[in-house]
Amino acid sequence: MSETTLENRVARLEKQVAELMQQVLKPPVEKNWRGTIGMFADDPVMREIQEEGRKIREADREQAKRDHS
View (spheres, rainbow, N blue to C red):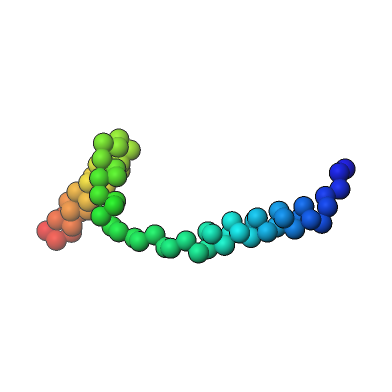
């Protein structure tokens, strides 16, 4: 097993700390809901999810009609 010198270990740690500090000090990404518009356009899985949701809502409407009749 090769020995690592103290200088090499300190150099590696200093590099890691510098990288971590860059990550921590980055300005926060501004959250903007407009960036999500269209992100699922033409996505077949999302279409399937929307269709299943539509079916559930329609079934709920029908059940509510029967319950109030």
